[in-house]
Length: 70
Image 1 (tube, one colour):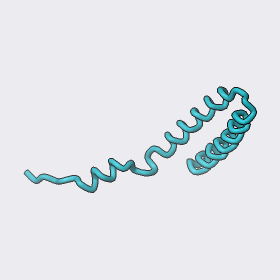
Image 2 (cartoon, rainbow, N blue to C red; image 1 turned 90 degrees about the vertical axis):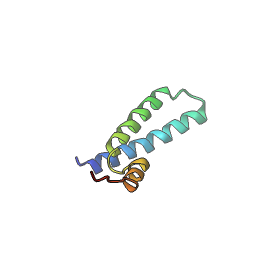
Image 3 (tube, rainbow, N blue to C red; image 1 turned 135 degrees about the vertical axis):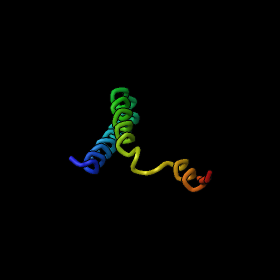
């Protein structure tokens, strides 16, 4: 499976899980197990996308980097 396919599958799973959590909240039921699964999937998605888009500070530091010649 490619990184793109894994990312897409994790996002689908998160959408389904979000709907299930919302339904449980509306019914007044406990959603602790779903919350743990959601947290795990979200961290997995974050790790997959960590280097895909440079952070704001990375882009800012490259913009203002100054080379000093000795």
